[in-house]
Image (cartoon, rainbow, N blue to C red; front, top):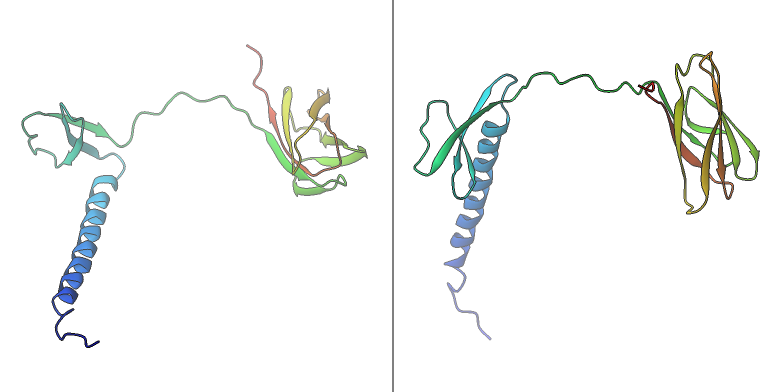
Length: 179
């Protein structure tokens, strides 16, 4: 079989134009996104919203909206909100199956028996009651966390009870004072 000359000749320039067109479109989209979203703090953003379609079109300050569009503007920085509940301090950690600490600080850990671990928090850790959430690693099964003692010096003792010896992660968080 003999190939005809010029059979692909018209296709190669068309593919090249297509690649260049896609690259230019991607570049233009990136420039438009940066212009739209990279607003410095405190800058007002102006837009026009289509009344029927709901589409939003960012415009320059003073630019008129088209027929069927409503002008909108907003600031990229709003007023400060009310302060949230302070849940600090919190202690997080990873305890190995043998009771040694894998990751974390601000506590000690000890294996008391098969699947029973004790977490000790030093004086000054807590100023009010705390809560602990523990997650066993690699098992689905029984898990219980018991906050045994909380002392006025801010120390505390908790037990994590699992149905097997397994590593676990935990987060202990001070609860907000009761109203």
